[in-house]
Image (cartoon, rainbow, N blue to C red; front, side, top):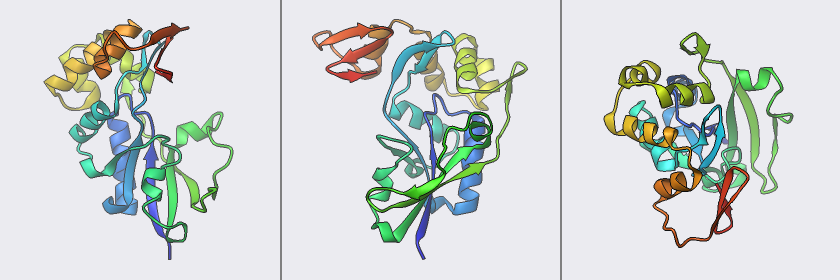
Length: 214
């Protein structure tokens, strides 16, 4: 029998308690040793709802996930969260099957994925499994990535704890800094410690730095 690996992909900007609850359900079903959260290191400081869309890099996202109680070794950096080669390529195609866990809300209205299973060009079998939607509210509005970032941008320490479920001063300070920094060039330099001598240009509302778009 093939080994099944359960993969929970996403941007997680930042991970909320509903994400953590969903992944705990995944680990309960498939086993901790077979379950992974996958996310990239990509940042995007273009604005959505008045806040940066993806201001956190992988390490910053990981610190929030572990604060939610997610085991560190279950969090994997990948180039494409919806094709986790960094996990699959540890196995031969005949040894493993990937199950990608997608929220019911994403599949209910204007489904994100038209195809729900198949085989990659390398021969890895995969399928999508829909996990129940976990609803959390922020001030009467259902929690989403954008609404969470907006609330955290303007909220105080109590608001942070009410939304996230715990409080960490370092994470709080970093999130406030990232979410309130809407100057694209400065935000990118702060995120990666970049120097002014890099070849940069602003195209629209995105930064291209040495040919890499953020």
